[in-house]
Length: 385
Ligand SMILES: [Fe+2]
Image 1: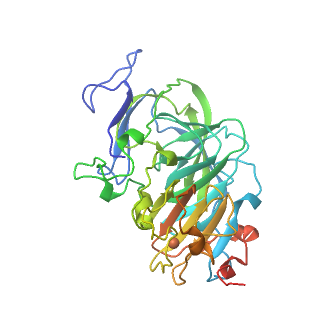
Image 2: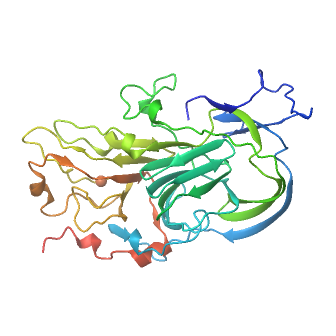
Image 3: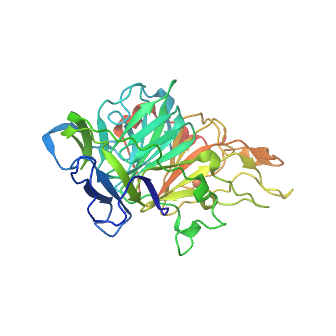
């Protein structure tokens, strides 16, 4: 995150004596990626972050692909997934490769343990629900439409608000960032960006807990979960500063672009990772020339697998799609509007669509668990009957 942020108390200079009220030294800790050269934050804690009393393997999370690779357009209905469980333990892997994964979870309870993903950044799209993400760097409140970005290594725990909760989780091997072309050479989002730093929400309300005793921490590493027993509460940070922390952007703060004629999906790009991008399709007026064709033209997405999560039931170019649908249009087969959609779109003035797109530059696998919610006839839905 290219914005410097700080909360709580930090010493005047880094790596200097910084004493607690009892005269002891605070424990200084750097959290950042790519060793000491990537984005990082410097934390000051009441206790050393290092003591671990016990470690035990908790669960194998290996994502299992379908046994027979299938080559066709795919459609999955997430509303057919069973709901309930833990937001961290019960995510259903729908699609994945070595760069990115899309998972879905509808938790009905809060975790009493803390969680840290040590193998990937997470972008959690809140399709339904609200709550607070508690982290050792402060709190982020979230509600429907938020993208909550949690860089790897950030210890956290969810507090859920009332009502049903649906999270679409995109896990990324590479660092999730704002698209390079939206930033100037100094890192600031330019006037050409569809959102600004003002729209990016950063942690607030740093809680410092000085509590000895055993606390459970679940860490994801190499597609396995491990349970660590800590000897004090991990939210013991009195202050921190830097560039590495969780942050949030509401899809409703993404300003869609509109042209005289149809603008392509990169205009909707919201984030980038390594070998994949995330785009947001938001309510907007259609293209304004009287001769414009509002729906997209057919396209062959060469070197890209396209995934769309439909965050509302309204999508201008598709039939048979419902809220919670996920479609995969793989490289190698063209896709485009369903029969009749192009003609029907002429003269339309606006769309209320809301969707999250993940485009990967390497092929995706379909998770075995996704097969039970697949609409197996989707690939034939372009055939006129
Ligand atoms: Fe497409």
